[in-house]
Amino acid sequence: MSTIICGVLAAGVLSGGPPAAATAERAEVPAEFGSDWHDPVTAAPPVRRPEGVPSCEVTVVRAQFRDFTPYRGAYTPPDGCGSRWSAVVLRLDGRVEGRQYDRLGHLAIGGVEVFRTSTPQPSPDGIAWSVEKDVTRYGDTLRRPQPVEMLIGNVVDDTHTGVIDVTVTLTFHAARGAAEPDPATTPDRVVPLGAAGTLTTPRNTERILAEVHATGSGGGCEEYWYLTVPTGAPYSCTADGGPHREVRISVDGRTAGIAAPFPTVWTGGWSNPFLWYVIPGPRALDAAPVVYDLTPFAGLLNDGRPHRVEVSVAGVPAGRPGWSTPTNLLLWQDEGRAVVTGALTRHEDGGPDGESLHTPGSPHRLDTTAAHRLTVAGYVDTSHGRVTTTVTRALAHTSVHRWGDGENPDALDATWTDHETVTAGGTTTRTRRTYTMDGETTLGEGDRLRTVLSLGDRVHTVSARGGRTLSWSRLDDTYAGDATYTTGVPRDRRHAVGTSTERYRLHGSAGCHDRTLATAQGTVTEDRRRC
Image 1: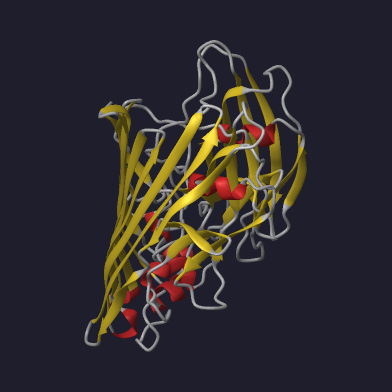
Image 2: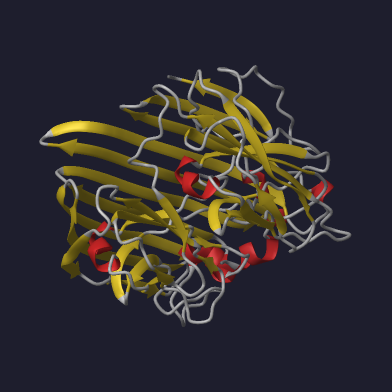
């Protein structure tokens, strides 16, 4: 994290408000930010809900977060919607006013983390926002009464006056007629990985996914892990291996999965809250977990004994805080067999490869390259025959980091790719993930701090069998912002200006969503839909 970022870090904006009109009326744009601005919004699509079936709503959290005391309550399944649901939708509604930093929050039901989020920085007059998430896959957990814990760690004092007021509800849509839960995406069991780090699977488990809510946060160097430099280079945040990070999961000490962490810019990131007051960066409202297919290990895990499952973030200096990795295991069971046997047949770990090369000068330059490839395969003998699963995942990271004296300016141009191929039972699913970040922060004349930043979240998925495409989707979520304000002065003298845009395009066999938002000085100037 640069000196600039350390010196002027402020909160940003999280969003999830109700959909706007197809085209926003041309609003009058103020010359600069005032004491209030538009409530947070994003261009992401609303969660799909089945039509024509009964629904039931349960409130799971109603709390005000003032400190670091978690909310604890109890969840009871709904009456009137059965015990199997075609969809379950989580909705968070929040309010905050005054002055406050951005805060990271999480919600666990029955020990299962179901939601991780960030909060917006309020205007003095106050803002309201909402976030929705499809949590149908946690049906196993939600069928029984469960303890609830939610924490949005916060500090309220004479300066930071914003109390974060939150309500979280679950809406259950009954499974009737065509509205049936998808067995491919709804596991039979959901098991949180506890502090002991061991897993004992039901002996008839035939498919295993792990989801890891891996987030670097907390205001320290790991919140800006992509800007760290090797030890010895003149920069405020260092790490022996430079900025490369990799989230790994292992089974009994053997690497079982690798992934590139998404470079989330939280809602106070890159020194400039005016970038995020209305439109957050990709995934800031819903920090989606990393997902691994551990099915090749199912035969090994089904022996009735506990096995050690560990998650780590490679590249983090020893003892440095900042990363959180709560993990859920999603298990599918074979109803026709009490014990499913199998074996791990292939494990090829190419090992991580890469370097960070520091070139001193004015500006300094750090060139980073990294790559890692892992292939695992195994089979299970089920009641419907032998199923072989092969998982190949290939990661790559390239970045150029330039910074001047006093870390002014401070610029990064980075790309991460995470390509995964899973072949199971004759069906092959290819997922190509690409994350991009291109930005610069400068502190100029009159202590005017300017940040120009673009972020990209792109995912292309294709499933095919026998040469025939079964399903496909292509996501392209792109954010761009440019904001300037005066540092070191009271809020009402910052004379801040800023523009931001987001275009969220999701096309595929399930339909189309294409929405563009644009803002200036906290006012929404464009809201356009193309599908």
